[in-house]
Length: 258
Image (cartoon, rainbow, N blue to C red; front, side, top):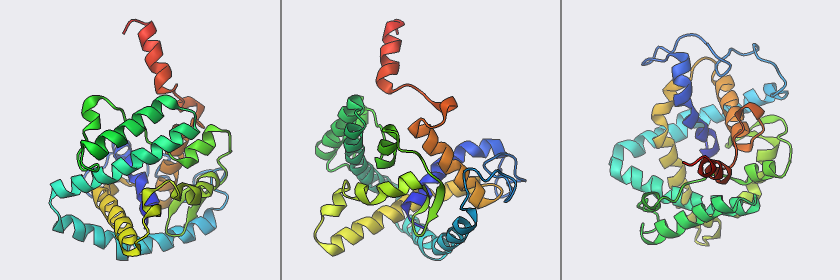
């Protein structure tokens, strides 16, 4: 399975408390995240039948290719090296987030993201060290799918993409354009570009190995609902989860004397 799929597992630790998971005994489905197949409404997933087939294909690829590679990577590399590689790729992500922040007209976020990229690329030696966090430059992760949401493009149906994993029509439309925001796209040497991409995928997969145990119930349903909840929270599509921008919250706190 590729990177997009396993970004979802960042959310799994939150759901662990809901499910009451301990060790390998995760118990029965107990929330909308882990409801069994057929028990949830189809509104969010009218293409479920084909999505499940693609999901099964992706699961097989992960089981026999990516996951073993991630386990081997973790066993072969010390934790400090793993952390350093992760910081390097997070630094590149700050640059992409900065571009999207400009497109979203969030200038405060853009300043922080570009500031983080500049500081970590210089003082942090190419992003190997996170110096920016020590000088109060906040991280604001975003992407082109959220940029589309910012300007009113509807989410569309949920879909699972081969090799890529969970998505929506809106997010799927952002994949190719956003690739041009990634520095690796401009590396002309093929072996270097492919090696860098492979390292990114394996490093991220290794970082998320432990979080998988928090998945409960039907795996497809859990990951679909986790993905949709996360994207709606980030885009503001879920009114009950909507929060003001950071700049707005800061100004409100100043007005209250904080």
